[in-house]
Figure 1 (tube, each protein chain N blue to C red):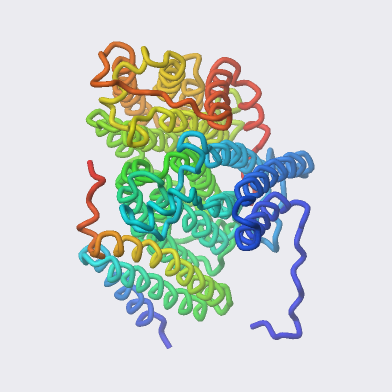
Figure 2 (cartoon, rainbow over the protein chains, first blue to last red; figure 1 turned 180 degrees about the vertical axis):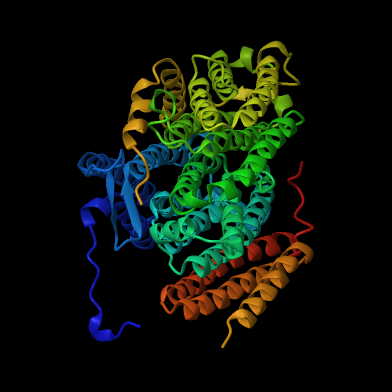
Length: 532
Length: 99
């Protein structure tokens, strides 16, 4: 036991931790702005603050990435910081950069005001009940919740901490910091508020349930290893001799928590409901960024801490990966709502990423220097850009009652707006993994890493399920171009430059990463392995 | 003293919580069951801390309490909003989103 006299203040590497500190600090600042800035200034101040923060953190991330030490023994770069609780290495920095870019796009979508006639797409006053006088008054007075920006920054700080966390406690706290703001954001839609509130309730209940499993898993692993540090756990796992039921139970329960966050079957049930009910800007940000954070944490936890127990967890991930791909692709066939369709497609994509994850290949032994870490990182980038842009397009196809998400309303969109339909069709082809889109290169990377790891049955299932998935993506394209519009047909509301930029960036990234994937693949390769 | 009784108690509490989440209908009761799962975890953490003779588990238990408190704030906000809108806190009534 430590007595008070021995206590020494820990030494923090402020420079290396700066991207995290900037985002978390600005989130707190945003709360103060909300309390002190006059109402008419809040929108400008909050948007400006958020954009400035994200760009500043991005610059800091680049600087941290350039200044990482190379470790002599292998291909890894970086160091453990924050008194052993944060691992700042290549993959962490790569994921930080990815998350910050997605957050930048997310902020632009959050700040969109033109689609709702001059107000944000969030509830004017969340406390005013739907359909009451109070809500009408809030709407006439043009009230809006600019708190969404600090909430997004809080979620972002959790997302950035999670894949970089080097002990189980930090990982748990990061998971909660990531989740809690997202629960609230899901419930703040301006239109269809009952659906939105229900989405928030479901997300919260199931999220809290799964994090209960996650923390119990942590307790069991701690009981086994006697430490929260990933490196100590790795040592205990490698040197084990029989009697490891605590460890196996712990691994399984922690996996439940993380697989829930990435939306893998059988823990996927929340995904379609929340993606459909949440405000579309939130769905776009959440779909891309949560996946990045949770897969980053999974890579670190399973490769670094539980690497020695690989033969114990691989079969479990195999089953989950196959189930996820099949459930995502097959149920998507029967969807009639475009947001739900994209949600099931997100589930299927989780399955594809798990396929690459299970390969567990080190960079040097994989083909073309692509290890599992690199393949997963690259796939997350490609998937994120496609998803954000696709949901941004969903937010501009509207009718009198807001977004027209029913697929039947999308019939004939090709005639109404060839550009929007064309871009959406291209993004869907990207998600299906057609060559010359980033989806193809991403899939190629994860399948190659899975094959190199000997997981060929998984790759066979994945290719089959890609074909099934292609069917429903192409069904939507056929619907947009070759069906007659029903009734008045869909209308495309002209968004402000903010949403347009997001769609353009997503489209360009999907095209460029499909045609010249080299630079980003090299960047993922240069990230190297996870340090311990 | 053996640590087994404490771990068994913690497992029993956790199971009661988990079963409660799966079977109960009222959002508030569901939420209490989740809190029970977290408290069962605290018991396990403190027990293991004693077994290993280090403080990690006890410190984690404090963090779990703080996280549970934060979760209460967010969770009750959502549940109360749903209750005011629907005049019911039953999770069975919230069934607009499906399939």
